[in-house]
Length: 514
Image 1: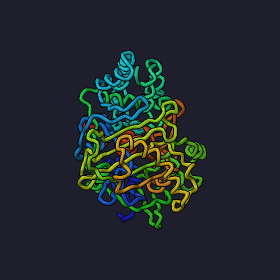
Image 2: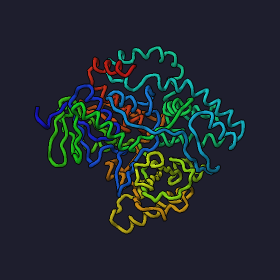
Image 3: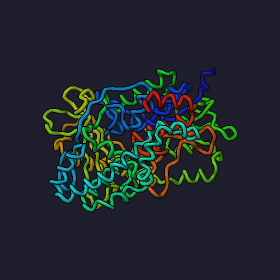
Image 4: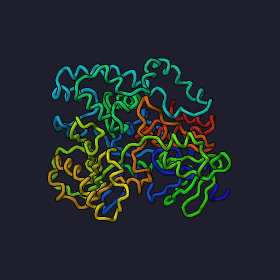
């Protein structure tokens, strides 16, 4: 074996790419992951400044601290024999036009919120919605992504789930439609409609009209069951990434950092490897898997190797907007004693949840894991999720005064939201980092710094792992099922299964208890 020859090359070490690579190593393949950044994890990577450890991206986790769980990322961790310590909690803060309150997961606590804010009719509507969502939730988790594969072997890997599918047959047909179609039939209260729009947006980057019912059904099945808790990984998102890397490396897989893929190598009608920026070539005997977003994957391919219809369709895929970020390391002395670890702020329901600078997310994970900051300090991450237009930043020189001024102006809404819970926040800051769409594009290697595809329910569906080019597969948020940690872990799983022999796939399902 040549050092530069492997079975599978995975481009990118996001959660989808690492899930795929770790499972392929579990299946017995020799895998190389090429990551352009100096830190693995993609949008989920962590970084350190002056003793403060920051999550670059996701901060809300569920279904990971216990097993069996419906979360596909939990399935990956179980499959590769890895885990990490978790801390659990059950509420986050809401800063809404109706006022400030704490929202707990679980059905009963939200009834209390609705009763106080909207009255008994709103509670009755929510109960009716839950009754409708219960069978949809069961249908959404009836077949785990671990059982899916893209050949006729799926008949065997999914056979044991046949009875569950038959029981949920009436609900399955509704899962691919927009959630608004479910919501419109039962919910008229404006607050509940706004709340559901917000939940859809935080999960998919789209409002209820654009979010497939399956995504919300999965959330209802997880968040509104008895005894539910939310999770946070001790060590932050970087610890979760490290667990996936351990699972990869323990079975002989390799992770190459600072390995920027410049081109996917194609011979005839097959992807046969990659060429790095430094000229090194890594040949792939079985497959190349791209964890890059769909637009960036196209840029890696030699011109003309993809059928024109596929290239045009991929290039024209609508995209979500980007982000503004604040990463703060602060003095934690005499902070308000009732702080939650997470907050969501909405400035104006009428503007819509997708309006720029209207929704702000706040995370203070050191309230759950004090080791993320020096003694007596805290880390804070504030961001405007998938609503910052890239066009406002395109062409700006990151070293220019214009860029600095725009950063200050566009960050103001995040400071304002944070001051609602920590009024003297600016005086407390010891580390202040402002991220923009250009930051997103630069460090995460994402086209226009985008959150991912914005394919509206009923107007299209994200592709599966296979492409028209033989031996080239894709995973991540540009592949089915889409955006979010559970979804990208599912996409990585499905891509790995598309390469794995049927016998090994069935053995894995047996080990997982499926």
